Image (cartoon, rainbow over all chains, first blue to last red):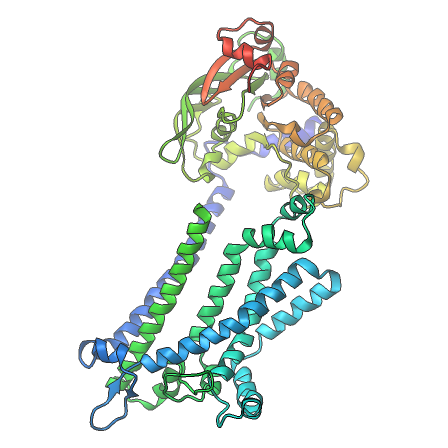
Length: 310
Length: 268
């Protein structure tokens, strides 16, 4: 007994003496710090790069009024090229909006079922499937839009073109739903069981427990899931390029073809001369996309903080 | 390093054992305007059980947090004044981890780490480089015995510690705190999640342990302080109202009538 006691005491470092463990701790703290700030450095680096590439256009050809308010994106017009992104913004916004209308009920419903109702093997199987769905490449979704949704929409709604806002919105919604489900389910899982038990002890039904205690407790995470979906919608390129019809147009209905901001960059960047006005204008769209994403994330952060405070 | 043999002589002398921890003008603030503790000065002597009683918001837990620099983790917690541990100012120690390894803490709610029961208790010795099975076996058995848990878990040491019942987890927490033979053991309302019978067993253990270490006992149970503590401090709203021999406080020999009111259950 006495031996065990002194064995430990004898190995403790003096409180005024730094041992190997202390130095290892400091070293690892430093390495983790480097890892942490590298994310910030990368973001600043990317923003700087995009800004520099689009800078010439911002200084010379750029007209605030034309860029944001003109619906004419005609960079290759020989007499007078115009660079208006209004129609592209409308395209991206309409597709993303429809995608969220599709994805939010799907993903929240799936998350509540997986997290609150299913048990055992069903639950495990569902989680694996959702993760598999999330891993499907976007070009495959675009292909489904092109070859399955397109004829289906033409047949069902009797419209001439099936590549439109409806097609891309549904495709994008289905595409964003799995990852949103996964995040929302994590948020529900993080709610401690004692909340559920406390509510159940009051005689609340399963739905009342979920609606009154679980969802409010998880709302930050759920909001995060939705905003991640919005971000995905804005940033997605390949699937919307294939399913929207890629026609510059301010949509009047879901059956109109549109063109997205990202798809424009993807389709045109390879055909422009590096450093030309067109090339720089595409990078200016890049800056704009970057700023939108930044604002979405910042808003989400502020909302979440606001919720936390109250 | 003070060996147990040397401590035995002073353990029960009652009078003026050397100060293990000396606190001078300790104030603790949270954020810009909340004062948890103001200008507390006291001495905790070697091999005594020092009880701290007082109602909620008295500053008891903040006091414990300051003693082993747990405030380093708590954002917005500011500390002024001096705390001396073995006559060394804990603000100035060069190795805070070594300091913490000498001061064991048991929190109010049990924390069974998600390791096996055996690994929970062997964690700290392993961190100190003890890897021999035979040596660890002795330490684990001894600590679990002392925390009055050995008989219940000796046949399933490889079960997960986090799956034990609340009371068992709390005894596991105590066993873990004892595993590196701390010089000071701080208990913050340890009996909240423990049944009365087990509480009594742990109290008996604490009476024995004070031969080897100094114990600080924060408790909401006034009678627990009466049963265990050699000296008791009464905290109220961030002030240390009174410190005295436990016997004096409980026999009505108090300097401040608020102390007597609290002890007799008239408020708090």
